[in-house]
Structures are given as C-alpha cells and as structure tokens.
Image (cartoon, rainbow, N blue to C red; front, side, top):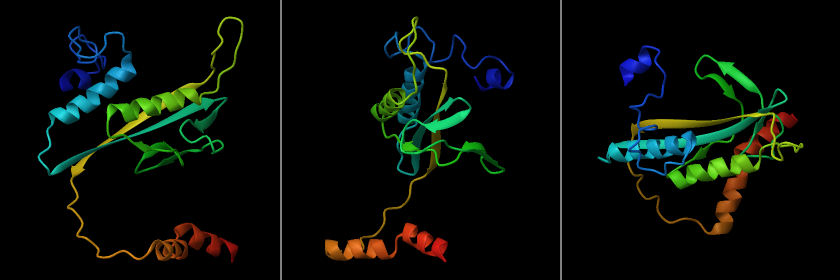
Length: 178
C-alpha cells in the first residue's frame, strides 16, 4: 500500500480496508466512521507490550464566510490560522480532545455537527455554506514510567490556596497589569 500511495495513486483503492466488501463494520457507514474504526483496530492490532503508548486526539473546526470557528468550544470567537516552521499551518487555540475509544471520537463528531452553522431554505432545511475539518492527531511514543507516590496530600482548602497562588493565569495577569 505504501508504494501505491507514494506513486500518486488514489488513497482509497478496492484493496483498502476502508472500502473492502468484507469490512467488519456496518456496510452503511460512511468514510469518517470507517476511518475511526480503522484507527482503533490498528492500534489494538499493534498490541500492548507495555513500552509503547498510542494517543489519539481530535479537533473539529468550521470555515464559514472566510472565518474559522471551533465546533468543540463555542465560547471562543473566530480563530486565527497561523504558520510556523515546526507545525506548518495550524489553527491557533483550537480545542483538542483526547479520544480513548471510538465512542469518544463519535462524541466529537456528534458535538461538532450539532454546533455547525446552518440556514434553512426551500430545498434544504439544514443547508450550510461552510466547510468542516475534523483532524486526528495520532501519536506513538514511549509509555511514561509510573510516578512514585508523593506522600500525604494537604487538606482540600490548602490545595485550593496553592493552586490560586501558583496559577499561570494569575501570574500572566499580574505581569500584563504592570
């Protein structure tokens, strides 16, 4: 498959697991549910030898009237598209969710679709003039060693006071006020 993809052939061929006739999932599923199932099947097939950890994260944004909106965090206004040498193009402050299973990823899709901007007209009651981008970030890396226990924890009121005192947000606010 890698040779086919490197040669410029289409990404989906009749031999690809996402379009095969013997697909294990529901035959009526579209490309997104099949892709989600495939990602988690491949992670499960890789096995868990204890040394490697897979992390799957998802983001979902919408481009509408040349503005970018986060479909998972509606409290934000429009987002900025940025570029840097390390990441290439990216959407600044886009909300990213860690997905431990396919149900988490389906919840991301459901939430994103629920938050899309739609308008009704005579031919289509859920019309949209937007484009949506769901991005999966799949990371394979070494499993972090377990942390040693830290000992007894202070009572809850002391923990809250310590959080307020060492909060990065408070530090930034204090600096910007100078």
